[in-house]
Length: 251
Image: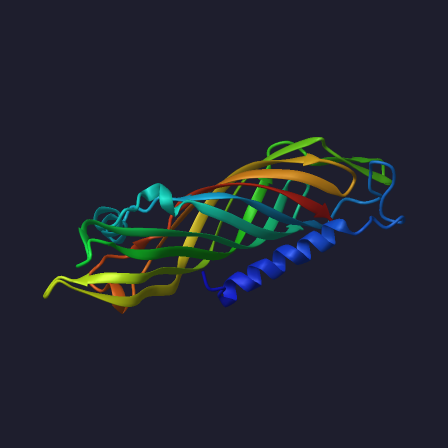
């Protein structure tokens, strides 16, 4: 699968987050298991799996005509987040993510003149850029007087947000021209930007005064326009459910 500009941006963000999380805490800001002040925010990187719902007619077409199933669009999910603390339990979240899949297939009911499969490769990518709010169901930490802030061992949360999503649906390979039953090679692609919204829930598990493990489930809604290569189809379903795991670094 060719690497697009949005994917390179997402990869750079994840790499930067890993570097930030790996930096040692400064002595003036942290002690043994506590901080000398409440964190102003955090940086988080996650990886996991995303299952698109694939509930539009373009997916019905490729799963009926080709040897594809809806589950074949399940793929890797990566995301990075920058948190800005608004209050003891609330935060503003800026996020950039990527999810994608790539599968080979063939026509279910047709072969070429040599009785060989007529094969294609289908890829599906989504890159959401979002802003949202988070609310911790229990305090993520407690102040001890005016000199220390101790993180909670477990901090469950819920949240939601909105943003923009770039997507690309692409098929490369051999196809049938049903007007004369000839086989031709082509690249069919549809990519665009659209609006998106999500709700999420997860839990942070403190590993130290600054670092924490985090896991999250996210439900995303989005539908986008289709390009000229897939004219005649309705808007493509970009919604899905993702489960991710990662690490964070308090700042």
